Amino acid sequence: MNAKLETKVNRGLRMLILVLSIGLCLLAAGCGMTESSAPERARILTQEEVTAVFADEDLLLLEGEEVPGAVFQLELNGVKPQLYVLNGVELPIYQFSSAEERAAGWKAFGEQTATADLVPYQAYQEDSILMFYVHGESVQEGLKWNGQLDRQLKAAVQGLVAAQ
Image 1 (cartoon, helix red, strand yellow):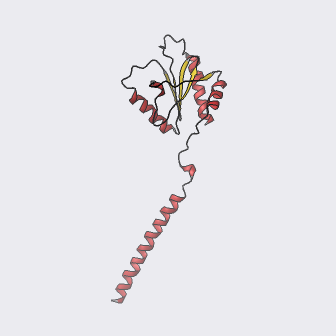
Image 2 (spheres, one colour; image 1 turned 30 degrees about the vertical axis):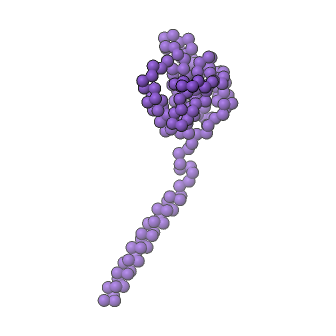
Image 3 (cartoon, helix red, strand yellow; image 1 turned 180 degrees about the vertical axis):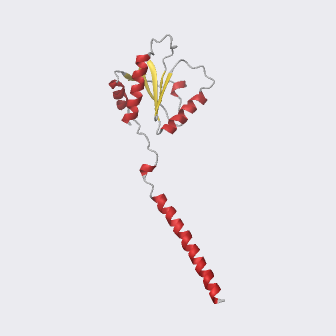
């Protein structure tokens, strides 16, 4: 009878040691995750850095003004845009902390403006940047928006991403 009790105790100790070993392995694996394994958060650029990137593309940005209730100045997922003007045209730039947050911001914009009659605009999205060029003209009119400007704006957005 004593041998049976000893076998049960040994089996119990083995199970306890096994469970503790697995727990320690899981704990060590969790602690081994470094900051670099977390998604990288984009740095928010200053107004000076943004204007410098646009200047590299021969685009002169001026500081914009907040207009209460303006559709292209909505807060999207907790992010307010930096407001600029380019050639007299509104240019809000949203800098999210990740591409995923930018995608959620774009979705929120769509939801918030679903029933609105929006003026013509061009949206630029890359990585964590969402930018609207609110030209207010149809592509056919094309006085404030054209292929050359489109290429410059795309390059500027890529420059913003690189600067982050």
